[in-house]
Image 1 (cartoon, rainbow, N blue to C red):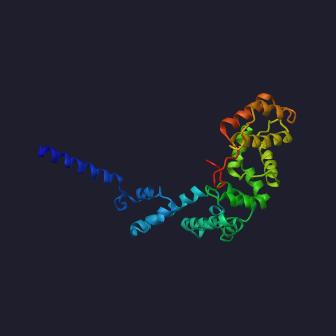
Image 2 (tube, rainbow, N blue to C red):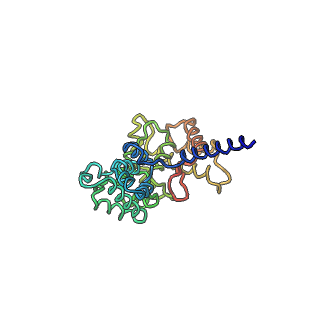
Image 3 (cartoon, rainbow, N blue to C red):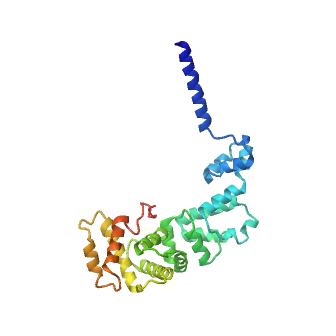
Length: 284
């Protein structure tokens, strides 16, 4: 019995030792440099900075520019600095820190945040460059973006022109629009202008579309209202598909009842065209 118990104890220690080795972070000193860099490429910026404090080897590895280049492109796909000569005199680590600082400022003051990036030479001072930067950024303050775009119609226009709505069903196209641009909480000049720009781009992406702009705009507002009606817990008597079709039939031309019914079903099954979380950002 004692021998059996001793065997079990040895096996348990061996399993525990193998488990600890498996779960522990690899010793980068034992790896080829290119493999060590690949391991570190899975860290975010905060963890990469913490890893640089471990020892001199880790510090030198975490400052390899290719790691910071990946992080830059992961968060900001289109930045003027990538092609305007800025990188000739700067590292990607310094670029990342500058961009991160600019976006922190953007969260509280969007104009000041972008002004800082422009002054640093990271972002070109034209609406096309600013629009591409915003459109392709992975993380951006949604409330600040709405505030900025309400004052920069030129940038708003350029952002919408980057959207591809080819073969998109209208409700799905609206969802994409409001996943890239904040949906205002009330009807007003901003929403009206946004829908005008959206319909210009939507029709240019779908050249064979026979519906008039006026008809499409009525449909857009109707789909937004239907979204609120079907998803709001405060609306007890939900609009039926028959009511939706009957209400629109006199105001839209060239659209069949079946198409209107499909639009209703899309909202009913897929939800609001402009779903947002508690921070005002688009729900993912």
